[in-house]
Image (cartoon, rainbow, N blue to C red; front, side, top):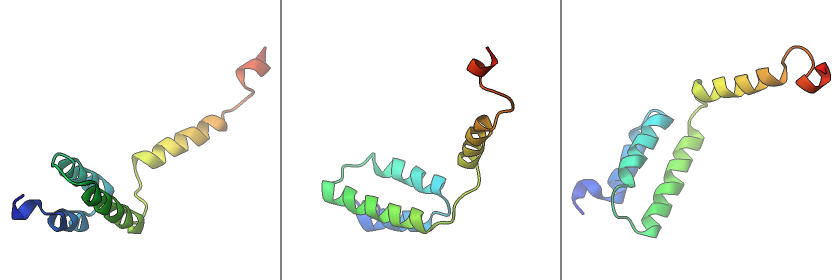
Length: 83
């Protein structure tokens, strides 16, 4: 592997990411290379620590959650109660 493809270099790329989407894009590139099980484990633990430390993002996940709650709070009885 070249200098740019060392595990430490990839971990530093994850450290520089500003959001979850960026991290997942880096991980998609990371997965294309041949890594040992130990290296994959180290990277997995590393990026989970980084994501856990990030504040919650507002966006698509929140919209889906709100949509699910809205369906539960639908006005009126459910279909079988209308019969």
